[in-house]
Length: 295
Image (tube, rainbow, N blue to C red; front, top):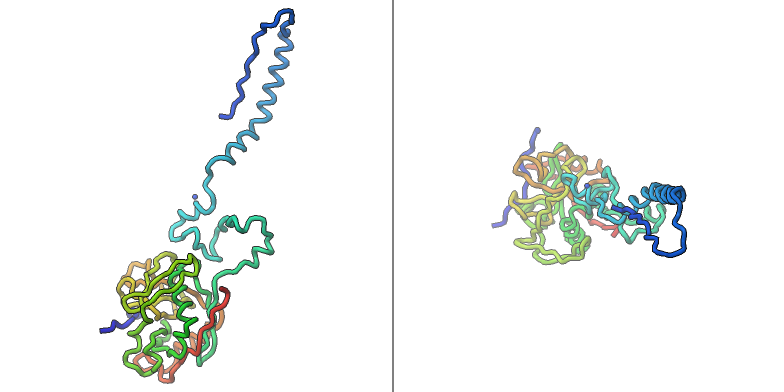
């Protein structure tokens, strides 16, 4: 029996030293240096050591092991060095491939991909967090490119809460099975690592409890049955602060965020406020298509 993908009820709630030795005077007929000459030589050599010591110390540090920004960032709670957001506080050292590039060149480097959602109520856009949750985003992009989401309707909308979408049974907007389906089992490419990932047990993917992005207004999160690794194609768009749904919150709900709305948030608010019967829109709201760009 298919398990309905759902959300919990709405809550209110990182000894360089010189050894100076005198040579023995074993040469016959040579006059040994006078004491004043010896003192002068010693003073000159001592001055040389004092003058050079800062440079030697500096060279010693540069050749040693020094924690870099990436290592320090790796100790930051909730963040991974490779998954700092563009809004993160600290900049990570540029990889070797970027060495020698100007700031203008670096500014042109691609960021996260963008999804453009075209619905019967309007168009909105979202940044997809490929840098933070690559399995989730790669699966979503794979489904978008295959046309999986085309013609699917929003099957559950609640004002002041969220809009849920992505069940294949919801191609029929009145289907009683809407909310219980997912994609077929199969494989897809991880667009960050190049690895081949799998969908299993009814099209589910591995949970990515990695980045502490919260279920805030405008965020996009994975829907699931409440069991581990039970997310597939369904998602919800938050139109309220639903941080109680965070995977790192104290509650039992674990819904990782994988994107955020960048344009057209008002469309999602409008969708959440349409007339419904048991949270199902009376006037069907269809996803015409989702276009991926920036990758």
